[in-house]
Image 1 (cartoon, helix red, strand yellow):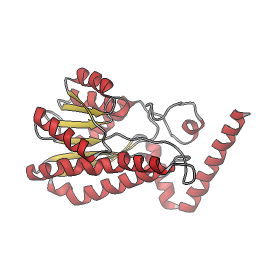
Image 2 (cartoon, one colour):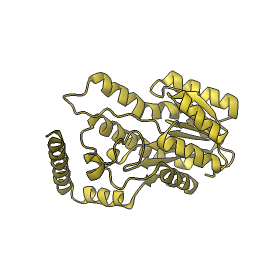
Image 3 (tube, helix red, strand yellow):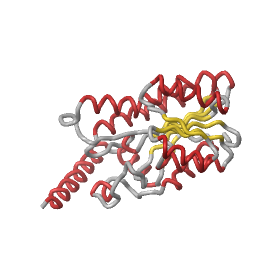
Image 4 (cartoon, helix red, strand yellow):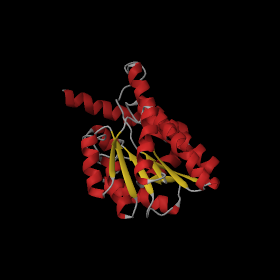
Length: 263
């Protein structure tokens, strides 16, 4: 799919990958709507790209439906919906409050379903549309110290795969973005133990945006941000026991470094 003239919604578009994609897609001719809880920063991005900004809690189905209605009233039918917003709190099964689990489930997974329910019928009726889903390599491998994030991102991967199998030949194409480390507010300190050992080569949001845009133009499903991601995936798929042992060693290294930092 080419971007020129396409009405595009990007959630989590006020910063990071979302903001970089808004600018990249707009340069390719897309008519972009930036959706984010942070309306002020979304408006800044919208001003940069000649688009519109909408305050939206993507974990609320009614809010997503209203987002789509507002954009379609202003710009026309949605051609591309990029479900990019995501959150993470850290924690495991014993120390993460159930409310945090539910919030991450709503934002990291259900938001993708809400968006799909809102725009897919129109796309199928026109025989043309595109859904982009941001997961993470945490959804294909896993991530240390952040169980709710890993679980919800695994769910996004499964959702996107099913969508591609079921709707690609009916006009509803799908891409899945599964980045390693990207220099965004979510990554935080790029010199942290996690960033050094687990995040892989850290990319700039603008580089990732270009990768996403080219994948959409090629109608390619999986978007990886570094070749090493494929190597790690191959290692997991070839010898799961060895991969698990390696991940345990990495966890032990990071925990030892944190303990040393605490003195």
